Every structure is written in structure tokens, then in C-alpha cells.
Length: 267
Image (cartoon, rainbow, N blue to C red; front, side):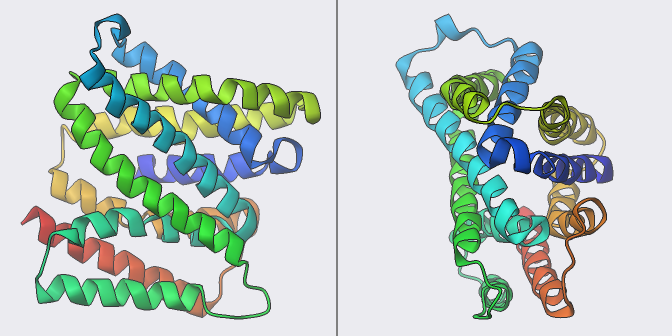
């Protein structure tokens, strides 16, 4: 679980190193290509056998997948890895608490809301566009979870996820070509983007498959809630992005709210 989380956040940080050359759009395009190659090689989706009832949620999932990564990486470019991932985690938190009326979940919502208010408080250095992009990523992640449930029920195994990744990669082909023509990539930038795709897509996918054979889903979900902390740590080490005490406290509030809500949902 630790390896999966660190690889995911390290991949995002390494991808950010290529932003000066490729920009977030170019890095996300390469990441989508890598994710599609890996997932299709593992799942081997039988696309010709898909019915329309299977295709429509797969197409929506592919669109959400690409939008989620693009909004997240654009947010990372503007407000840093730790804050961007923290805002993105509001998506699964909202899903976890949506159907609940318990006082504890209301308290979690208040705690997470307080953390977000602190992160988005008015100050001279505040980048509200970057914060808005982080919230878009959160909405996309919530949609991603709901669509994955539908795809998982209608498409066997991991074929649906692989097909969605392929759809997203095809949509980003002209984008990648346009970025390459406008800003000719260097070998180092391409290497960073490919590394981001491997570390943020391929390695976590395989690591999570192995992890879920050994630990309960509840334990796995609880550990996932620590990702904003891992993102802040990796952003500090790899990108030199420092956070103040107030920002760390806000991240901690969102992490605690996620952990408690996930534990409650599992029960």
C-alpha cells in the first residue's frame, strides 16, 4: 500500500518536471497512452463483443478519466502537488458521505469543509484558478467512482477499465500531436512523462491488485486517505514545494475526515 501510494504521487511529481517543455496537457496525453497500453495488455478487452449498454458507460468513463487527470495536473502546475491532491480527495469523501445521515458523517463533512476553507482562504498568493481545477478533479473522481461501479457490473474483469483507458488515449492522440508540433519535446521531458505514466498508472494498478489479495478492503481504503500527506511530502522532496503549518493542518483535517468516513462506510 505504501509503495502504491508513493509511486502514484512520485509519478505526478516527476510528470511536473516536464511541465516547462510539454505543459500539463502534453504530460497528461503521454500518461493516457501509457495507461492504455498497460491496461489493454493486462486485461485484453474484447471490444467487438461490447454491446451499446456496455459501451456508453465505458465512453463516459474514458472522458471522465482524461478530464480528471488533466484538471489534476493543471492544478498541480498552479498550486502544488499536496494542495491539488487534497482538493481532489473531496470527490471520494463526498461519495462516502452522500447517502449518510449520521452525526459522525456530518462532523466529517464540517471538518473537511473547514480544511478546504483554510486552503482556499483569501491571501495575496492564492491561485483560485488552480483551486478550481482541483475541485474539478474532485468532481471527476466522484464521477469516476460511480461510473466504475456501472462498468464493473456490465463488463467482466478489468476489460471495462482497459477500454475506457483506450478511449481516453485515442481522444488525446491529436492533443499530443498538437503539443509536439507547437513545443518540440526533449528526450528528458518525454522520459519524465513516460515515467509519470508508469509510476502513476501501471505500478499502482498492479500493486493494488496484489495488495487487495492480502489486506481487507477497509484497510486499503483507510490507507488511501493518507495520499494527500504523501503528495505533500513528495512535492516537498521532488519539487521543493513547501507548505506552512496552516496548510499542513488543513490537509490533516481532510485526511482525518476521509479516514473516518471510509471506516464508517465499511462498517
